[in-house]
Length: 257
Image (cartoon, rainbow, N blue to C red; front, side, top):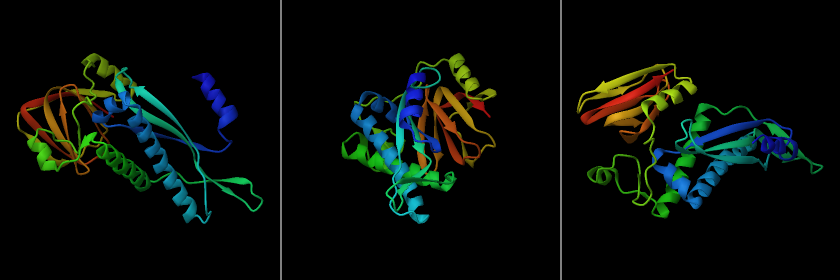
C-alpha cells in the first residue's frame, strides 16, 4: 500500500490539490458488485463520469471553456469488521485543466462542493446506475405496489440470483467495536412493539444500528427500505425519516454521535 501511494505521488498525480470522493453501495448491490466484474466496472465508471460532469460544468460557468479532469479509483471490498462492503474511494484533481494560448495545460482550482452540488452528483449516479442495471435485468423496476404485494419494500429489488449483502455474521460485540472505531460513543439497545411506528421526525445526532430481531421499514428522501435481523441502517444527523415496525416488533443496537 505504501509503495502504491509513493508511486502515485511521485509519478502519477500532478502537483495540484486533490479531493477524495467516497461512494458506498446499498446493501442489496454489494454482493452483486463483489461477484460481477461488469457491474463493479460500470458503477465505478458512472461515478467518475458524474464527478467529471460536475467539474466541467463548473469550469464552463467560470468561463474556462473546454476543460479536462483526472481521477484514480480504489475499490475497497470490506468494512471495519471485515464484512462484505464494496465501496469506492476516488482521488480526483480538485479543479480542471485548460490549455492556454501556448497550448500548455493550466490547472484552475475549484471551490469545495456544496451540499446541493453533492446531491446532484449522487442523484445522477443513482439514476444512471439503476437504469443500467434495469436494462440488463439485474434489478426489478416494476411498480412499487407490485413489489410490495410480492413482499419487497425497497426502491428496487435485486433479482433472484444476485444475493443480498448483509452483515449476517457480525455479533453484537463486533458491531460495538465497529461503532467505537467510527466514533459512535453512545451505544444503546432499542426495542419497539409490534406494528408500531413513528411519523416524520429527525434526531439531533448521527446513528448507525444493527437489527438484532424483528424488522422495520424506514422512509428517507422518498425511498422506503426494509430492514431485517442482521441488516445495518445508517441515518445522518437531523435526517428526516419515518419508521414502521413489523408484526414481531423490532430490536436493534444503535450507536449515536
